[in-house]
Image 1 (cartoon, one colour):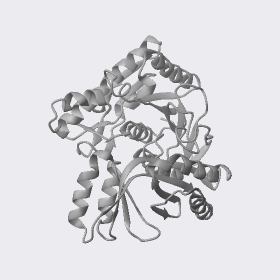
Image 2 (cartoon, rainbow, N blue to C red):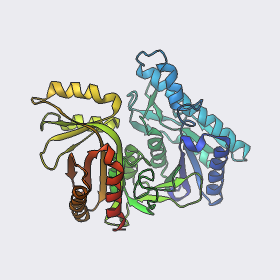
Image 3 (cartoon, rainbow, N blue to C red):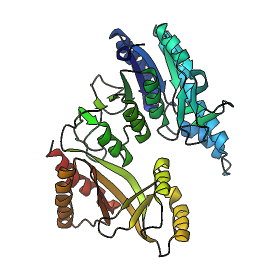
Length: 396
């Protein structure tokens, strides 16, 4: 199967949430086929919490009695949302005259390491997928899930797992690229919710996009980007609702020395004595996307940010491990610029000076070869984002 003719398209929950939007999905598939591509698609569950078949709505069924949810039950009901979406989208394509076959992870032969809630894809047996594609049929594959061997129990890939599924399928099939369809036109210099007029990049390197995703850019999950980077499979972020070309993520040169601004959601932020937490623990926290950390450029102390539902648990764990008291910085915003080392260093110094002029307190900061991160009070988020966006935009 030629790499240049296979195209994988991934559609998120908002893209498949209504009948009108599902028709747009069919239109994108039809246009890709008209351009000569052999298409496979990966879909998320339909909609968001409150919509009847959304993942969170289904999970709320398990949480309704207030008791703990067993990981295997969590994964099984999680997988139901994507299975429903697969059946609906396959039917939409068939009624549009496009041959399609819906597949769960088991039917698509996507195998995991067997870990519940945060599984890794270990292998994809593409025999059935290749057979369908060769026959002119579009495989419609459930995102965010894989099955364990030999039990075939469902395991999920964590939040953002449909992105990871899309890329994993693309890599396994030797696709020319993976198109991730979402509700934005591409990768903007900054989150449009922070900076409404932020421009969209035409291209971003794997390395820069991975760092942006790690520190809060939500358009593609960092695990999906790591898989694309390792598999050297280009990714294009596009809008379901337009024909805009989107943003190419590939082994390319970035458009400008400063690539973009990422923002993590406001987090309960703690300062921990240096040496309290080992690197593998920090990596496990980041993998779960519930806790992030950095080393403060002024003190060398470990600064940790936790999601609301993990703050007390984290504080207890750190309190037991630390020889000195853990200090709270309260609810903080973490803003990061990503780019080249020289440009970052200059922009970091200018931003710190500008923050001082504006009376914005910087609780902690970190400057690495590819990233500058500032931890500031959440109340100053909009003003600080404007300062950093201006620094990036003037380099464009």
